[in-house]
Length: 390
Image 1 (cartoon, helix red, strand yellow):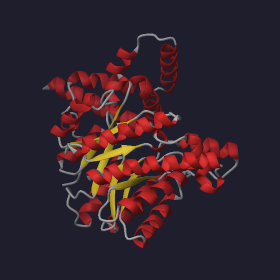
Image 2 (cartoon, rainbow, N blue to C red; image 1 turned 90 degrees about the vertical axis):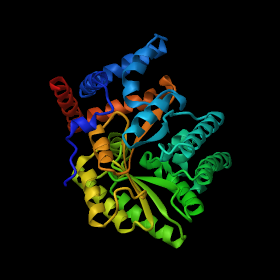
Image 3 (spheres, rainbow, N blue to C red; image 1 turned 135 degrees about the horizontal axis):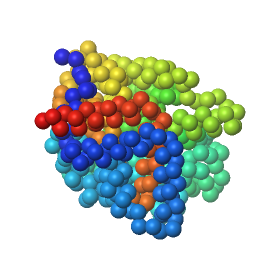
C-alpha cells in the first residue's frame, strides 16, 4: 500500500485539542512575515527591559517547538513521543557563546545528553551544533586551512578540536550515534575537516559519528561521493544526515556582497533533485553509509520509503532513520512511525532566553516556506473539524 501522510487522526494522536488550537494560532502567526518581525522586536525589547514575559513564551511558542529548559523537563516529551514509536534527539539549542568557559560548559551539557541517550532506548541519537562549542571567528579563519591561523588562534583551534574529540569519544564509549550539525558555508570546510578526523578515529567498526550535508548547496553531492571514497581509503564507515538547508537568504546575501559564486542551487528543483540523488547514492552503498533523512518534505520521505522497498531494505533497519523537528510535520513523523519506519524528532531545549535565537529562526523559516506552513495549517484544521464531528 502506498505511503500516505494525510491521515490526521494518526498524525495528531499525541496532541490534545488544546495543543491543536495552540498550534493553529502559532502557525497562523508565523505565516505572516510582518507578524514575525513585530513579534521578534517586541520580544527582544521585553527581555531588554526585563518585562515578565517568560511565562507567556514558555506556554506558547516554546511549548510548541521545545521540550523544556533542561533534560529533566524533556522527560514528558520523550515519553509522549516514545508511546507512538517516535524517538527523541535531545538538541541543546543555546547559541552564540564565545568564551572558553562557556564553550566547555556546553560540551558538558552535550555529554549529559549522550549519557541520557545511552541509558534510554527512546533516544536513538545525540547531536551538537559546532558553533555551540567553537568560536565562529576561528572556524571562519580556518576555513581555508589552519595555516591561516596565528599562534594564538591555533591554540583556540586545537581547543575546538579537543572539544569535538571529547564529545565524539563519549558517544563512542557509550555507543550512542552522534550528529554533527551543518553550518554556514564559510565555516563548513573547517567542520568537514574536524568531522572527517572523527570519522576515521571512531567509525572503524560501526557508524557512530554522522556529518550533516546540506543539499541546497550545489557542491554537496560531489562532497558526499568524495567522502565515501575517503572513508573506504581509511577503512571506516560514514554516517550522513541529509537535509536541504536552513540559511539560504544569508548565504545568497553574503555571496552577493563579497562577490563570490553563490553556493546555493539556483532553483528549488535542483535542490530537490540533488537531495533525492543523495538518498539514492546512500541506499546503493548502505554497507558503508548509514543515514538519517532530516526532511519535512513529503515527496522525499515517500521517495526514501520507495527506495527502501525497491532495494529490499526492511523498514526497521537501523541504518536508516527519518527525522523532523518537534512541533512540525507531525503528519510525516507519526504516519511513518505508524508504518513501522524508524523516526525521531529533534527536541530542542535550554533556558528560554538563551534558546530565543533558535525559536526566532524557526518562526522565520516557517514564514519563508509558505507552502509548508499552509500544509501544516490545513491538516491541523482538518483534525480539529474531525474531532468536533466525533
